[in-house]
Amino acid sequence: MSKQGSSQTSQEKAQQKLFTTLVRIHREAEGASFTGVKSAGHIPVIVQEADAALRTNSVDSLVAKVTANIEHAIREKFTKAELSKQQANQSVKQGREYVNDYIHYIHFVEEINEMAEGRAPDTEHQH
Image (cartoon, rainbow, N blue to C red; front, side, top):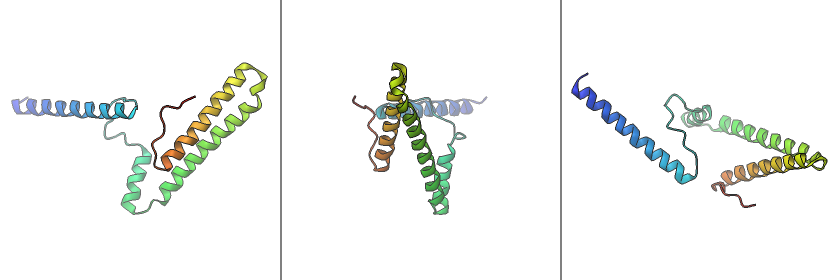
């Protein structure tokens, strides 16, 4: 390996380390976890679809997909909470399961709504 090639590799490694550190600090400031920088091949499908919407000047398909995903998640959490509510008085364990399901349902709806309104979700819920 030439000296120039070695220097370029060292520079790329240093740049990657700096970028990784910046992303980690940014994520920590948001209160989010950091699991490392993902390679370019790991772009989530929904991000690809959002990019496609910009390329095609049409957001309709993206809106329909995201809306359907949100509706499905709300209905699923609602159904789980509703079913556990019906059994909550049968035992302490089932009462706790209801409280857990209720909290997940309510917090999900609250966070989705806050994001839709353009507000950042409250990451520190007070109980």
